[in-house]
Image (cartoon, rainbow, N blue to C red; front, side, top):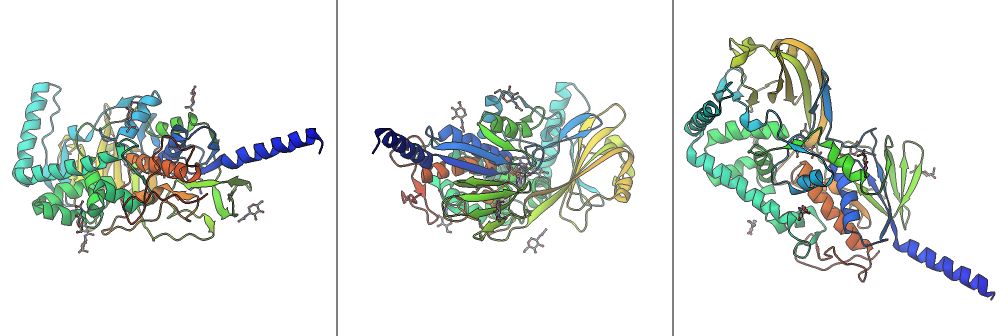
Amino acid sequence: MNPQITALLLCTILLSQSHAHSHTVCIIGGGIGGASVAHFLRHYSPPDAISQITLFERHGVVGGRLATVTISGETFEAGGSIIHPKNYYAWNYTLLLGLRPEVPSHSDDSLSLGIWNGHEFVYKTLNSNSKLPIVQRLVSIANSIIMALRYGVVSLFRMNSFIEATINKFLRYYDGLESRPVFESVEAMLKWAGLFNLTTITLGEKLEEVGLSSILVQELVTVITRINYGQSVNISGLAGGVSLAGSGGGLWAVEGGNWQMASGLINRSDVELHLNEEIESVYYLGDAYELNSTKGKSYNCQVTVVATPLDEVNILFNPAISIPPRKLQHTHATFVRGLLNPAYFGLELVSDIPELIGTIESGDLPFTCISVLKQHEKDMTYKIFSRQAMADVLLDKIFSVRVETVRINWAAYPHYHAPETYAPFILDGKHLYYVNAFENAASTMETSAVAAENIARLILSRIVEKSESTSPNLKIFSSDSSVSGLRSEL
Ligand SMILES: Cc1cc2nc3c(=O)[nH]c(=O)nc-3n(C[C@H](O)[C@H](O)[C@H](O)COP(=O)(O)OP(=O)(O)OC[C@H]3O[C@@H](n4cnc5c(N)ncnc54)[C@H](O)[C@@H]3O)c2cc1C
Ligand SMILES: *[C@@H]1O[C@H](CO)[C@@H](O)[C@H](O)[C@H]1NC(C)=O
Ligand SMILES: *[C@@H]1O[C@H](CO)[C@@H](O)[C@H](O)[C@H]1NC(C)=O
Ligand SMILES: *[C@@H]1O[C@H](CO)[C@@H](O)[C@H](O)[C@H]1NC(C)=O
Ligand SMILES: *[C@@H]1O[C@H](CO)[C@@H](O)[C@H](O)[C@H]1NC(C)=O
Ligand SMILES: *[C@@H]1O[C@H](CO)[C@@H](O)[C@H](O)[C@H]1NC(C)=O
């Protein structure tokens, strides 16, 4: 054979071989979950293991459930808003991307709180309008006493211990790669951290077991689960623990909007970003997936990552996938510039109305919570969460002045149950992955990032040849726990 042709052939074979070892990863969804998968894939991948990352976002902006809303020229968080001080991925993203953390001007622990039952405030903290530190300190001590008197010191202490214990277990997900396996299922991931049992009983049951007074569970705890998940203490103990942790001190947000974490990660992870492009179908063709979009385009990907809840989207999978049915809890966020009507709350002055109005589970309360986002000279900007849309007639009863109203209907988070059931991380046993299977444990920015980090390692452990595998720990915990060292073939 002509030596030139031989060289050419050899060259072609080599090229095609190296191509066969390099993968295109397609990610569906540009929220913090999808952005985190891209980030960790680039972070952990050996050189050339991944040739391209393509990310599809049906909307014109990334961020998903992280978005801001503009009310009379000022922006506020409309979806995911607060971040726990021990949410280390969110913290590292913020530093890495050159963003700035800020303490929300009215962080929850400085707001005066009232618990509304539809007729009266069953609990109310004192409000200090004083800027004097000494007065603020005294008011804060007085509030602690009021709280201790109503809910009991021991019960409050036990609640804090439960929160601490839950957080400490969660911190195991930041263990180094040498000691932290790659998880093939949500169950295995939760069991390893000692969190699984908390998803088998409700928060109400768990707190009773821990010995909390029932008035604490029915009032303060319920107020918090309603604010954070729009649901009662019938959510799982884990979702409840996460929710309670989100009511503590030291909470923060990204200045200018949390969505910038998603956009920043996508920007610096060498991603081909397709905005305004919705994926309609995912067909497995034997060696790759064919993704078709609403733009009539078709893409071939060796690996596909679903980074959006599948419960309310219409993506056609072939072969069909099977996941447990899951309902999403809708939270209606209504933003109002104006003034609350004190008469609605049986009060005389606007200044008597607490800055954060929480509610208990009682009949047909039309809202879950109302909080002051900003105090202006003559009026305020408020945020209302509710399970149903807030009609104008209703708002006109609650507000005496209303100059601007913005409504957002979020498919916010799962409707939680105990015991909880989980979709698989690997939807088809091959290379189709599902980040949001983890949302049944708890839905937060950080849990999305934690799930995404595991998915990135799972992908790499299943595509990278053993010899090439360097840093990511390839030990896999299978669903029936125990280290199996299992590696599925490509
Ligand atoms: C009102 C509210 C308050 C919250 N408060 C907090 C909080 O204080 N703290 C906290 O940590 N968390 C909070 N959360 C939860 C947090 O916002 C979410 O857990 C997190 O943002 C989920 O990120 P994700 O990337 O997994 O999903 P998403 O943000 O939902 O991202 C999915 C993306 O996929 C896109 N997409 C869907 N289908 C397709 C398709 N077929 N093709 C292409 N793109 C598609 C969507 O447009 C979306 O951008 C709150 C959520 C809500 C709604
Ligand atoms: C955050 O970044 C620091 C500094 O780079 C690093 O030591 C730490 O492990 C990171 N934390 C997580 C959870 O990745
Ligand atoms: C979880 O519950 C099971 C069964 O009740 C028990 O055997 C196990 O020890 C519990 N695990 C933890 C971490 O509490
Ligand atoms: C919580 O669950 C119990 C038992 O199923 C039920 O009786 C109760 O009504 C539920 N509470 C709420 C607020 O949904
Ligand atoms: C993307 O990153 C570059 C620097 O790497 C920066 O200049 C640019 O502003 C970033 N864009 C966005 C949208 O974040
Ligand atoms: C996807 O698009 C390709 C190319 O247009 C087409 O051949 C294929 O039938 C489409 N698949 C589906 C499921 O629509």
